[in-house]
Image (cartoon, rainbow, N blue to C red; front, side, top):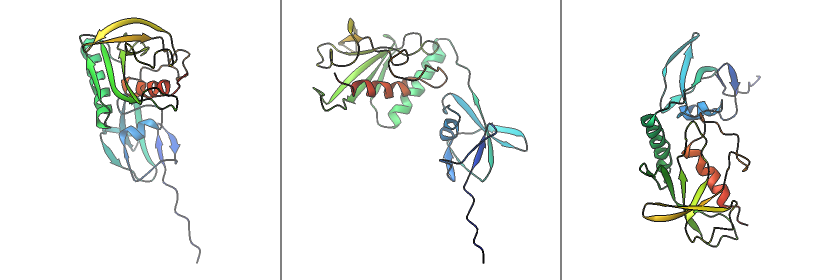
Length: 208
């Protein structure tokens, strides 16, 4: 008797077929990731009989050949919208155990106790400050280290001005990951403080 090999689970997202990484349950973030977006920057809906349903949240059950529609959210301007977006991105990091604080009066975010993953690292961890600047329309840029840090002069980028946030002085470093610094092209619909952490960790891991 012939034994049939079970068909590999697949779904369609925006009419494109995906097989790799498809599992019986998936988060809306995983579904959005298939087309280069995230749950923070897009809305995910299940499509049935050509009609898109209500927005999905959390984890959903996946059936063979399910169809999903993922639409990019518009980047909203205005102070309140920016504050809400930053809060959501930082909450996402905190859920994974990362210590991070936002100082709205200074328009700056501080990532706490980041590992300096280099065998030549003079210290094992450090705090890093990142200014909000013109985010989200403008790209995130630069990094600040505590004044006197032994990493200054050894990480990529020249030391520049000094600012005071959270009762500490911080030295600006001219690090530009989205503008020739090795990072991907800036996309305000995808990138944010949650993804900027990836660039900061890569920066700290490249000690001169």
